[in-house]
Length: 304
Image (cartoon, rainbow, N blue to C red; front, side):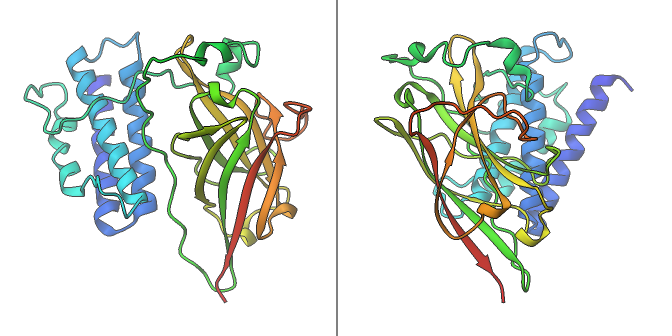
């Protein structure tokens, strides 16, 4: 069996796994599976040195990735009017399974996720050396950029007796060039003291409201572990990301973090640090001397 057939088989198995979880009501697992697969498909679509798939096949793979993102968004937002149903997603199974021979019309009127470079953590630092080199590029620009795929926020975990869950509301971030940031969003991760992931990373949807030196998010993030199960020295990281049109990739601008002793109900304001994100918290450099911060509000849910 050729490598490309093996890849398609792997995608098909992942697709089935996601739809199985979805039909069993295991929504967190389904969302994870859908998002991992969507990312793999997007990487294939964006790969310039791959001749395994024709342009038409790549277009279909991109559209499948969009549908996976849409189904994830529907599962996360139960009030969504634009619901993308499981039975609709299942119609794509024969397409992904037979992507090399499929030649019919795509069943849904969707567009592939915009072509944007997906970078591994740390990769972007090699591509750009200064922190605000294209702040001016976004200023006064009227070009309409295609929206990012929906955010990847996960639902709250089921409660457990005696255990505490944390909801962090990201209210706003203060930046001197807030108005010039294109498609700004936050990536939230939970790391141990060695920088190892303790939770799946979550992305907020793109912030839509900018005002003076603030970008407003007003979005709730459900931390995917009971507080009592977080190891000593763990921290919750917030990475602020935005799109750089000149370089055609999404870049981390700065980051903030909250340590375990800072977890308490109510508002909290935390400092912003220069990238690259230092998950081990060894070499921290403040982003600015100005009084600009990340504004959060914490809610603790304890099941007695």
